[in-house]
Image (cartoon, rainbow, N blue to C red; front, side, top):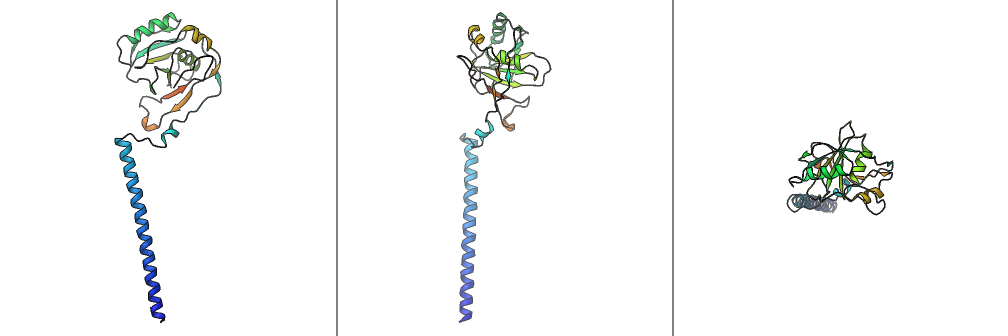
Length: 208
C-alpha cells in the first residue's frame, strides 16, 4: 500500500514538473514571438517604440538670456535644395542690421520640420536667440565654437524671415528654447543636434 502511494506521489510530481516545464516554454516562446514581431514592425512598418517619447523629453533651461543687440554676425547656409535661397536671405538679413558673411551650402539640414537651423557656440547664446527670433521655427544646435558667429542653415520649409515689428516685441530677456535631445543612435556624426522650442513671449513663439 505504501509502495503504491509512493509511486502515485512520484507520478503526480513528474506530471507537475512537466506542466511547469510546458508553461515555462510557452511563456518563453510567446515572448520571443512578440519581440520578433515588434522588431519587424519597427523595421518595416514604422512602429514607434514606447521609449521614443522618453528619448525626446524636453529639458528646459530656466535662466533668462538677453537677446543680443545688432549687429549679430551670421552666415547663411543653404541645405534646402532651393538655389539662391541663401543669397536672398543674406541680403534680407543685411537689411535687418545683421553682419553677414558670404553665403554657402550645407549638407546638414534643420530637423523636426524647422525652417532653419541655428548653430552657435557656448558663448553666443544671446546672439543665437536673436537670430532664432527672426524665424517661425528654429532647430537649435550648439557646436564647438569660440567666436560669436551664428550659422543659419536654411531647410526646405523656409519661406521668409519674420517682420521686424514682430521680432521687436520679443527682444526681451527669456530662457533659451527647450531642447529635445535625440538618442545617440539617431544623432548625426558631425555634432549633437537639438530641437528647441522658444517659450511664448508677446504674440509669437518659435515652434518645434
